[in-house]
Length: 137
Image 1 (cartoon, rainbow, N blue to C red):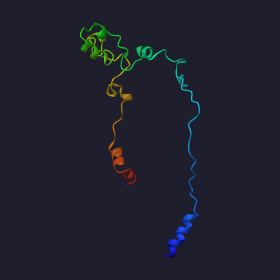
Image 2: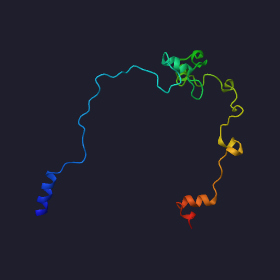
Image 3: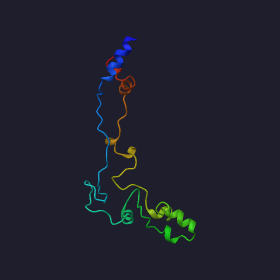
Image 4: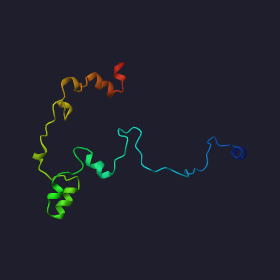
């Protein structure tokens, strides 16, 4: 019973070690105008997203410059061909060879032997499986 009174009195005079800074407030004025990132390679922003997308590359051209959107006759086929930048708008044979150019490789196994991964030795496998304990045994 006496211990409870002592603990309650200690809790009343205790100051927490954590310090709260209080409520935060947003700045009065923020500049939301677009500007070029400091690490960007160009010094100006693109005129519009459409112009940027027409020159962008991601696994091939994104702009859909192909014949798929303008040559289709039915509305459903034009909507499906425009969905991903006129994918399927032209035959695959017209896109050219799928072989990589000289000096480029699609898979790690096609690289010269000096760039391939070295196989694991049994000692390395044992060291990993035992957490390194087998190296000291």
